[in-house]
Amino acid sequence: MTNLRRIIWLASYPKSGNTWMRSLLAHYFMPPGQAPDINNLRRFTTADIRQDFFDAANGAPFSTDSVSEWLRVRDKALRLIAGSKPGTHFVKTHCQAVQYMGHHLIPPDVTAGAVYMLRNPFDLAPSFARHQSADIDTAIDRMMNPETMMGTDTGIRDALGRWDTHIEAWTGAPGLPRHVVRYEDMLDKPAKVMRGLLDFLSVKPDSAKLAKAIKATTFEAMKKQEEAHGFFERPAGMQAFFAKGQAGVWREDLTPAQVGRIREAFLPTLEKWYPELLEETAAVAAAG
Figure (cartoon, rainbow, N blue to C red):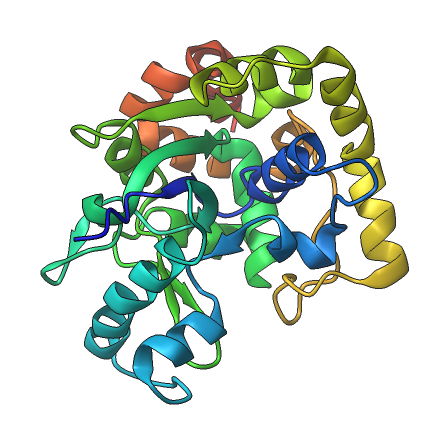
Protein backbone atom coordinates (compact mmCIF):
# COMPACT_ATOMS: atom_id res chain seq x y z
CA MET A 1 0.00 0.00 0.00
CA THR A 2 1.25 3.49 -0.87
CA ASN A 3 2.52 5.49 2.09
CA LEU A 4 0.47 8.70 2.19
CA ARG A 5 2.02 10.13 5.35
CA ARG A 6 3.04 13.23 3.45
CA ILE A 7 1.10 16.11 4.99
CA ILE A 8 2.84 18.59 7.28
CA TRP A 9 -0.10 20.45 8.76
CA LEU A 10 0.07 24.22 9.17
CA ALA A 11 -2.48 24.32 11.96
CA SER A 12 -3.97 27.14 13.97
CA TYR A 13 -7.09 28.71 15.35
CA PRO A 14 -8.15 31.40 12.86
CA LYS A 15 -6.26 34.71 12.99
CA SER A 16 -3.16 33.22 14.63
CA GLY A 17 -0.63 33.77 11.84
CA ASN A 18 -1.34 30.92 9.44
CA THR A 19 -1.33 33.10 6.32
CA TRP A 20 1.89 34.76 7.42
CA MET A 21 3.54 31.39 8.04
CA ARG A 22 2.46 30.04 4.65
CA SER A 23 3.83 33.15 2.95
CA LEU A 24 7.12 32.96 4.84
CA LEU A 25 7.63 29.31 3.93
CA ALA A 26 6.72 29.98 0.30
CA HIS A 27 9.22 32.81 0.01
CA TYR A 28 11.91 30.70 1.66
CA PHE A 29 11.45 27.46 -0.29
CA MET A 30 10.40 28.61 -3.76
CA PRO A 31 12.95 29.79 -6.36
CA PRO A 32 13.72 33.53 -6.46
CA GLY A 33 10.98 35.46 -8.18
CA GLN A 34 8.53 32.57 -8.12
CA ALA A 35 7.10 32.93 -4.61
CA PRO A 36 3.34 33.51 -4.80
CA ASP A 37 1.48 36.57 -3.58
CA ILE A 38 -1.23 36.23 -0.94
CA ASN A 39 -3.85 35.35 -3.57
CA ASN A 40 -1.92 32.47 -5.08
CA LEU A 41 -0.49 30.63 -2.08
CA ARG A 42 -1.90 27.39 -3.45
CA ARG A 43 1.07 27.37 -5.84
CA PHE A 44 3.11 26.47 -2.76
CA THR A 45 0.67 24.84 -0.38
CA THR A 46 -2.98 23.89 -0.11
CA ALA A 47 -5.77 23.69 2.45
CA ASP A 48 -8.14 21.04 3.73
CA ILE A 49 -11.17 23.03 2.54
CA ARG A 50 -10.23 23.02 -1.17
CA GLN A 51 -13.44 22.65 -3.17
CA ASP A 52 -11.72 20.89 -6.09
CA PHE A 53 -10.41 18.08 -3.87
CA PHE A 54 -13.85 17.61 -2.32
CA ASP A 55 -15.43 17.52 -5.78
CA ALA A 56 -12.93 14.88 -6.91
CA ALA A 57 -13.42 12.84 -3.72
CA ASN A 58 -17.19 13.05 -4.14
CA GLY A 59 -17.15 12.14 -7.82
CA ALA A 60 -19.38 15.15 -8.48
CA PRO A 61 -19.62 18.80 -7.35
CA PHE A 62 -19.72 18.68 -3.56
CA SER A 63 -22.35 20.53 -1.57
CA THR A 64 -24.06 19.48 1.64
CA ASP A 65 -25.84 20.63 4.78
CA SER A 66 -24.80 17.43 6.57
CA VAL A 67 -21.84 17.28 8.94
CA SER A 68 -21.65 13.50 8.54
CA GLU A 69 -21.53 13.83 4.75
CA TRP A 70 -18.74 16.43 5.04
CA LEU A 71 -16.78 14.03 7.26
CA ARG A 72 -17.30 11.10 4.87
CA VAL A 73 -16.02 13.04 1.88
CA ARG A 74 -13.29 14.77 3.92
CA ASP A 75 -11.69 11.38 4.62
CA LYS A 76 -11.36 10.78 0.88
CA ALA A 77 -10.37 14.37 0.06
CA LEU A 78 -7.49 14.31 2.56
CA ARG A 79 -6.10 11.20 0.90
CA LEU A 80 -6.25 12.92 -2.46
CA ILE A 81 -4.49 15.96 -0.99
CA ALA A 82 -1.81 13.75 0.60
CA GLY A 83 -1.22 11.97 -2.71
CA SER A 84 -1.21 15.15 -4.80
CA LYS A 85 2.55 15.59 -4.37
CA PRO A 86 5.23 12.89 -4.20
CA GLY A 87 6.92 14.02 -0.98
CA THR A 88 5.95 15.81 2.19
CA HIS A 89 4.08 19.06 1.69
CA PHE A 90 2.28 21.69 3.72
CA VAL A 91 -1.50 21.79 4.18
CA LYS A 92 -3.34 24.52 6.05
CA THR A 93 -6.01 23.55 8.58
CA HIS A 94 -8.10 25.20 11.28
CA CYS A 95 -9.60 21.89 12.44
CA GLN A 96 -8.81 20.40 15.82
CA ALA A 97 -6.63 17.30 15.97
CA VAL A 98 -9.40 15.16 17.44
CA GLN A 99 -11.84 12.43 16.57
CA TYR A 100 -15.22 13.88 15.65
CA MET A 101 -18.30 11.71 15.17
CA GLY A 102 -16.03 8.70 14.72
CA HIS A 103 -13.71 10.34 12.16
CA HIS A 104 -10.13 11.51 12.65
CA LEU A 105 -10.14 15.13 11.56
CA ILE A 106 -6.35 14.84 11.22
CA PRO A 107 -5.84 11.22 10.13
CA PRO A 108 -2.52 9.70 11.24
CA ASP A 109 -2.22 7.74 7.98
CA VAL A 110 -1.81 10.95 5.92
CA THR A 111 0.17 12.93 8.50
CA ALA A 112 3.94 13.40 8.57
CA GLY A 113 3.99 16.20 11.16
CA ALA A 114 2.60 19.58 12.12
CA VAL A 115 3.57 23.19 12.66
CA TYR A 116 1.14 24.61 15.20
CA MET A 117 0.69 28.37 15.57
CA LEU A 118 -1.02 29.98 18.54
CA ARG A 119 -1.84 33.55 19.52
CA ASN A 120 -2.83 34.89 22.91
CA PRO A 121 -6.64 34.96 23.25
CA PHE A 122 -6.80 38.62 24.32
CA ASP A 123 -5.39 39.77 20.96
CA LEU A 124 -7.14 36.95 19.11
CA ALA A 125 -10.64 37.94 20.26
CA PRO A 126 -10.92 41.32 18.45
CA SER A 127 -9.22 39.91 15.36
CA PHE A 128 -11.54 36.87 15.37
CA ALA A 129 -14.50 39.24 15.79
CA ARG A 130 -13.52 41.07 12.59
CA HIS A 131 -13.01 37.72 10.86
CA GLN A 132 -16.51 36.62 11.88
CA SER A 133 -18.16 40.01 11.26
CA ALA A 134 -19.30 39.85 14.87
CA ASP A 135 -18.94 41.95 18.00
CA ILE A 136 -16.18 41.04 20.42
CA ASP A 137 -18.48 39.46 23.03
CA THR A 138 -19.93 37.16 20.38
CA ALA A 139 -16.42 36.25 19.21
CA ILE A 140 -15.46 35.40 22.80
CA ASP A 141 -18.60 33.25 23.08
CA ARG A 142 -17.50 31.34 19.99
CA MET A 143 -13.95 30.94 21.31
CA MET A 144 -15.48 29.36 24.44
CA ASN A 145 -17.92 27.08 22.59
CA PRO A 146 -16.75 23.45 22.04
CA GLU A 147 -19.07 23.16 19.02
CA THR A 148 -17.81 26.24 17.11
CA MET A 149 -17.48 25.64 13.38
CA MET A 150 -16.82 27.75 10.31
CA GLY A 151 -17.70 26.67 6.80
CA THR A 152 -17.84 27.41 3.10
CA ASP A 153 -21.03 27.98 1.15
CA THR A 154 -20.89 24.36 0.00
CA GLY A 155 -20.68 22.89 3.50
CA ILE A 156 -16.96 22.22 3.79
CA ARG A 157 -16.25 22.89 7.44
CA ASP A 158 -13.54 23.91 9.90
CA ALA A 159 -14.23 22.27 13.25
CA LEU A 160 -12.65 24.81 15.60
CA GLY A 161 -14.10 24.13 19.03
CA ARG A 162 -12.72 26.16 21.94
CA TRP A 163 -9.48 28.12 21.76
CA ASP A 164 -7.93 26.21 24.65
CA THR A 165 -8.97 22.70 23.60
CA HIS A 166 -7.73 23.45 20.07
CA ILE A 167 -4.29 24.11 21.52
CA GLU A 168 -4.43 21.13 23.85
CA ALA A 169 -5.48 18.78 21.06
CA TRP A 170 -2.63 19.77 18.76
CA THR A 171 0.14 20.15 21.34
CA GLY A 172 -0.85 16.96 23.14
CA ALA A 173 -1.64 14.67 20.20
CA PRO A 174 0.17 11.38 20.91
CA GLY A 175 2.85 10.37 18.41
CA LEU A 176 2.53 13.55 16.34
CA PRO A 177 5.86 15.18 15.37
CA ARG A 178 5.10 18.85 15.99
CA HIS A 179 6.70 22.26 16.28
CA VAL A 180 4.85 24.98 18.18
CA VAL A 181 5.20 28.67 17.28
CA ARG A 182 3.70 31.60 19.18
CA TYR A 183 2.55 34.48 16.98
CA GLU A 184 4.03 36.96 19.44
CA ASP A 185 7.47 35.34 19.13
CA MET A 186 7.23 35.52 15.33
CA LEU A 187 6.60 39.25 15.63
CA ASP A 188 9.43 39.75 18.09
CA LYS A 189 12.17 37.57 16.60
CA PRO A 190 11.09 36.17 13.22
CA ALA A 191 14.56 34.96 12.21
CA LYS A 192 15.03 33.01 15.43
CA VAL A 193 11.58 31.45 15.17
CA MET A 194 12.08 30.47 11.55
CA ARG A 195 15.47 28.94 12.29
CA GLY A 196 13.83 26.78 14.93
CA LEU A 197 11.16 25.74 12.46
CA LEU A 198 13.66 24.93 9.73
CA ASP A 199 15.58 22.81 12.22
CA PHE A 200 12.36 20.89 12.95
CA LEU A 201 11.98 20.36 9.19
CA SER A 202 15.60 19.11 9.00
CA VAL A 203 16.50 22.01 6.69
CA LYS A 204 19.78 23.86 7.14
CA PRO A 205 18.94 27.59 7.31
CA ASP A 206 20.22 29.87 4.56
CA SER A 207 20.63 33.28 6.19
CA ALA A 208 20.30 35.30 2.99
CA LYS A 209 17.17 33.46 1.83
CA LEU A 210 15.66 33.77 5.28
CA ALA A 211 16.29 37.52 5.47
CA LYS A 212 14.65 38.03 2.05
CA ALA A 213 11.65 35.90 3.02
CA ILE A 214 11.11 37.85 6.23
CA LYS A 215 11.40 41.19 4.43
CA ALA A 216 8.95 40.11 1.71
CA THR A 217 6.30 38.96 4.17
CA THR A 218 6.10 41.72 6.74
CA PHE A 219 2.59 42.54 7.89
CA GLU A 220 2.72 45.85 6.07
CA ALA A 221 3.81 44.17 2.83
CA MET A 222 0.88 41.74 2.95
CA LYS A 223 -1.52 44.50 3.97
CA LYS A 224 -0.47 46.52 0.90
CA GLN A 225 -1.07 43.47 -1.31
CA GLU A 226 -4.60 43.14 0.06
CA GLU A 227 -5.29 46.85 -0.41
CA ALA A 228 -4.09 46.68 -4.02
CA HIS A 229 -5.52 43.33 -5.12
CA GLY A 230 -7.92 42.11 -2.43
CA PHE A 231 -7.57 38.73 -0.68
CA PHE A 232 -9.79 35.89 -1.84
CA GLU A 233 -9.50 34.08 1.51
CA ARG A 234 -11.08 37.05 3.30
CA PRO A 235 -14.50 36.03 4.66
CA ALA A 236 -17.56 37.75 3.22
CA GLY A 237 -18.40 40.89 5.17
CA MET A 238 -14.91 41.32 6.59
CA GLN A 239 -13.50 44.73 5.63
CA ALA A 240 -9.80 43.85 5.84
CA PHE A 241 -8.07 40.54 6.57
CA PHE A 242 -4.80 42.26 7.48
CA ALA A 243 -6.00 44.84 10.01
CA LYS A 244 -3.45 45.37 12.81
CA GLY A 245 -1.15 42.34 13.13
CA GLN A 246 0.37 43.54 16.38
CA ALA A 247 0.79 42.16 19.88
CA GLY A 248 -0.89 43.92 22.77
CA VAL A 249 -3.83 45.45 20.88
CA TRP A 250 -6.14 43.96 23.51
CA ARG A 251 -5.19 46.82 25.84
CA GLU A 252 -7.15 49.20 23.60
CA ASP A 253 -9.69 46.81 22.09
CA LEU A 254 -11.06 44.95 25.13
CA THR A 255 -13.02 46.11 28.15
CA PRO A 256 -11.97 44.94 31.64
CA ALA A 257 -15.03 42.67 31.68
CA GLN A 258 -13.95 41.04 28.40
CA VAL A 259 -10.42 40.56 29.69
CA GLY A 260 -11.89 38.91 32.79
CA ARG A 261 -14.11 36.58 30.75
CA ILE A 262 -11.21 35.39 28.59
CA ARG A 263 -8.91 35.00 31.56
CA GLU A 264 -11.41 32.97 33.56
CA ALA A 265 -12.33 30.72 30.63
CA PHE A 266 -8.78 29.88 29.57
CA LEU A 267 -6.68 30.26 32.73
CA PRO A 268 -4.91 26.84 32.71
CA THR A 269 -3.86 27.28 29.07
CA LEU A 270 -2.74 30.85 29.75
CA GLU A 271 -0.65 29.63 32.67
CA LYS A 272 1.12 27.19 30.36
CA TRP A 273 1.55 29.26 27.20
CA TYR A 274 1.26 32.91 28.25
CA PRO A 275 2.40 33.25 31.86
CA GLU A 276 3.75 36.74 31.12
CA LEU A 277 0.19 38.01 30.66
CA LEU A 278 -1.26 36.66 33.92
CA GLU A 279 -0.41 39.55 36.24
CA GLU A 280 -1.42 42.37 33.91
CA THR A 281 -4.68 40.78 32.78
CA ALA A 282 -5.64 40.04 36.38
CA ALA A 283 -5.10 43.71 37.28
CA VAL A 284 -7.10 44.93 34.27
CA ALA A 285 -9.97 42.55 35.00
CA ALA A 286 -10.06 43.58 38.66
CA ALA A 287 -10.06 47.27 37.75
CA GLY A 288 -13.34 46.81 35.92
